[in-house]
Structure formats: structure tokens, C-alpha cells
Length: 222
Image 1 (cartoon, rainbow, N blue to C red):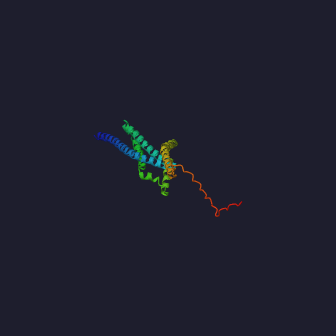
Image 2: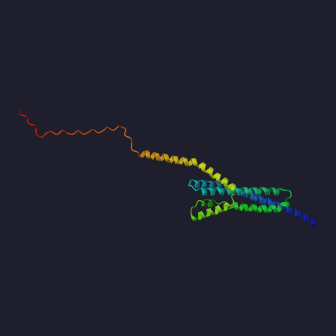
Image 3: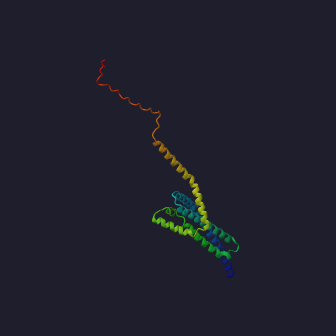
């Protein structure tokens, strides 16, 4: 009877371990989906600030925003990939053999979620636009962090993204310049004097009066 009780207890422990892993996996997946929605809004804000930086001629700052967005997308992809692999392991028949691997994978997933959570602040994004000493120091800190997280291949993709953004902004910039030129031309025309409607006639030359002799000439005697 004791042996049967031990066997049943062992079976229950195996099932509960698997159930716990399934629950942890579900919780992580739900959290990643929540983070994905939040990071989508943050990514839109980062692209908006990248365009603002380009408009001001600050390409370096624009690149920083695009690198940050790329890094966040990579974290999400990594998290979904980890969860997918864990799901396959949990659903395998030999769960007892991969249990330690699942536990380790869940721990790694938790670390990835922690890294994603650190990217969730809109205030920190706006802080990059700050030109104060504190803001510049924060920008350098972000640059150092991303320099080791972004591969050369990803960096090329980011630079191409920046070039596309510049081209998209060119029509708007050109249109603004054309409108400014038209306004300046209109201002110049308004400042010019009006053209006379009739041809001005030349002024008549003054006629000098003929002076009369004060004394009449006496007739000449024969």
C-alpha cells in the first residue's frame, strides 16, 4: 500500500510540475502581448521624434531613435521565439527529461521580459530630445548600451531606414520652401511702385520774354 501511495504521489508531482510550467508559459505570453501593444505606441513616438530630429538637421539623434526602435523589436522577437520553443518542449511526451530545460527557458524568458519592461517609458524617450547636460548624458548612455546590442547588419538596415525617411520628408520640405519663395515674391511685388496708366508728356520748354528797348530809336535824318 505504501508503494502504491508513493507511485500515485510521484505521478501527481509530475503532472503538477508540467501544469505549473504551462501556467508560467501562458503568463509570460500574455505579458509579451501586452508589451507588444505598448511598444507599438512607443515605436510610433520614436519615429516621430526621429523625423523631428531630421528636420532640425540632427541625423545622429534620428539614428539613435531608430536604433532604439530596432532594439525593442528584437526583444519582442526574441521573447516570442523563446516562448514558442518552450511551448514545444512542454507539449513533448518526455516532459520529465526536458523539465530542467523548460525551467531554465522560463527564467531566460523572465529576463527578456524585464529588458522589455525597461523600454516601456515614454518619458525616457522624450528625454533623448533634451539638450540639457542631463539629457545629453542620457543619450550617450543609450548609445553605449545599443552599440553592443545592434549588429553591423542591423546597423545597415537602420541607415537604409533613415535614408527612406529622408526621402519621404523631401517633398514636404520642398513644398515648404516653394511656398516660402512664392510668399517672398508676392511681398516684393507688393512693394514695387504702381506702373502709370498713361504715358507722361514731356514738359514744354519755357518761352523767354522779349525785352523791349526802353528808348525808341530816333529816325535818321537825310
